[in-house]
Every structure is written in C-alpha cells, then in structure tokens.
Image (cartoon, rainbow, N blue to C red; front, side, top):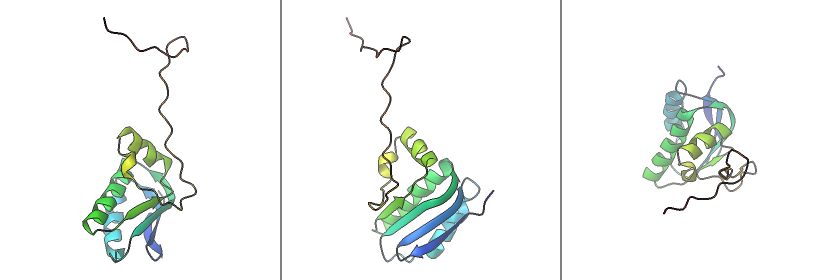
Length: 128
C-alpha cells in the first residue's frame, strides 16, 4: 500500500496522493480538517490518487457537504475513473462538480443501447 496524504498545493488547492480506501479515508478526513482555513473556495486535485474505492467517493461527498455548510464551493480535478464509475452506478455522478480548468476531465460515457441476442437493437414492447 502506498502512503496516502493530503497537502496544500497552492492557495485554495489541495493535492491528494495515494490510495483512497476504507483504511485511509478516515485519516485523510481528519488531516483535511487540520488544513482547512475555511477562507476561500477549494479545488481538490486527485491526480496523485493511485487507487480508489467507494470510500473515496464518500470522502468527496463529505467534502462537498462540509463546503456547503461553510458556504464555499468545492470542485474536483482529475477524479479517478474508479470513483467516476461508482458514482455513475450510484446515480450521484452529477453531484461531483469538476474544476473548469480540468483538461483531463472526461464526460461519463452514455449508457449502451439495449441489444438483443442477434445483435439487433430491441424494439420496445407494445402492451395490448
């Protein structure tokens, strides 16, 4: 397991490095509360995250909630694909605001069309 940490990269920007898992998220949450000056909007850069599971998604949602309580905007940069996938399946992807400067941001893929056994698109059933 890699070492997980959060640090201030610039004014209003946090850099997260390492793994976001059930073991590391509680420590990151406590560390983030120590770093938080509460004075400006916040961008959380996740480009250093090596691995993430649903605990990482919960951490991002917790930071959003904390930001709302303090009346400040929280945005995310370079959200890992694993967190995006969990958020999409959980129907909360739209809750994660992306930093507009995030050049690596990719929109979530559109859902696949339903295809029948013969590879043809299924027609909707008509009720009689």
